[in-house]
Length: 67
Image 1: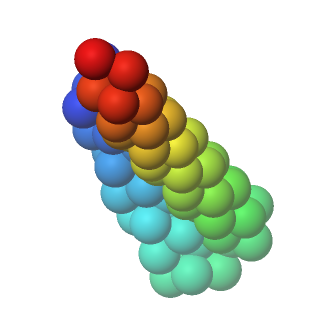
Image 2: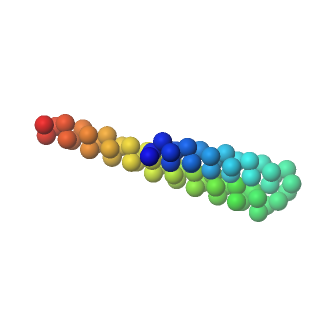
Image 3: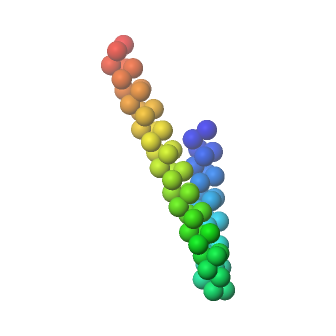
């Protein structure tokens, strides 16, 4: 499930980049802001997935120590 969430976050980041660039080209500040917001959301999603991965690693390490 983590990979699926990472793919969605990457897609959201790309979407945000494109929207921001289109806003830059057209001078549409709303598109610029929305694009940046999507990029920020994607970043947060990646951070969440990184934290999940670290917690899973810690869990695995601890459970090996109790075997």
